Image (cartoon, rainbow over all chains, first blue to last red; front, side, top):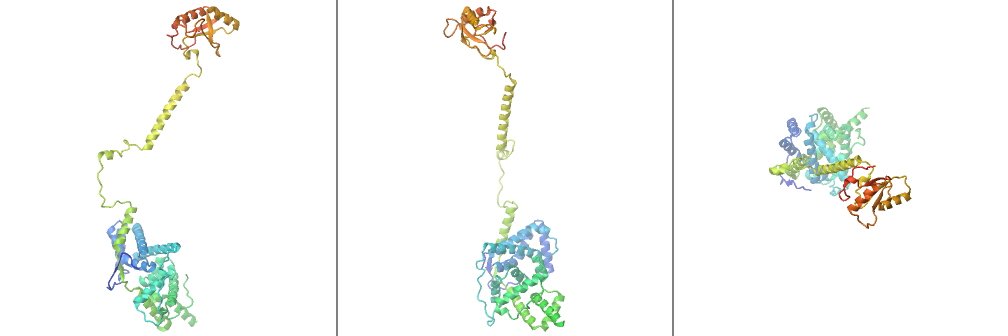
Length: 213
Length: 237
């Protein structure tokens, strides 16, 4: 599903944000947030551009609708604009912003679920069997579709871990839950994905976990 | 005991495998996990799956996202919520009359006008009512403008009715009004049908005043003819 602001890259590899978790990047983002708190619109635009692609990709995969993803992104940055003065640097800027995005996305999912707007979300491709060789690209497409079968909290944990590369502790801060809950959510998500996609089901997970939900 | 410890370690590492694959474990956790994976074929196999998943999720998209239009939408929203006017909109200087028209002294709000009128009417009404209350609640015979062709006559209350008729007959008068609650009679000269002349009335009044049983006759002698007289200020007994 392609939104109005998406363009083909014509096969040009788009590298993942290499430095967005680095110390230099975090310092720059903190500096931008301080400027935003003083009403600096240029700083706001710079921060928005830093996060837009990351969030658009993350949220479009989850919602499979760019318009919903864009709404969540803009809601997130509207809060960043309003609350920048409240950011004290207790956490990484990315953790703070992703935490806001996570809560907005969760609310959007719940609203969509109440409205029953689950169109196109339940249609899955026929999963390939473990006998068929699978390209990474195909696996990615399939995983994106399989994600919608997961509860929203597990879906978000998967994206935060695999795509955005956050540590367990960072995901815990973003989702506002204990570390063990994050581990458990990911444990159940992995089990379900492996059940849905045999090519991932190389081994059986332990029957029990010690992490609390 | 050793088996129990290893089972716990296996479960613990199994939960950490996604972060081992993405390189987001702490040094201590990484050391423990890698040591276990080297000895556990199940975890080794699962780690390969986790690498595959991590690679799949970080695979570049075939599409990219342009932030410009979304950012403009956001700024429009922020501007509208902060009540800012778009910078492109020119502001014209209002004329002097237009500026003065905004001064409350020149054009008070309609409600203030309405309130002022209501207050004015109220005060006027109260003043009228206060004047009425200041006036005496009784009326005198002199308050009424007498009918100019009739004489008002007050007789001694102790004389009988037959005597009244005799007195009036003797004076050449006949009753045309009354008596009212105070016993005052309206009389005209006998033989005159409708309107008596001033001379006839004056003559009749003079005749009646000569009788001691007549207390007063109006108009009074010094007021001239009824046609000329004005309402007297008080009764005369």
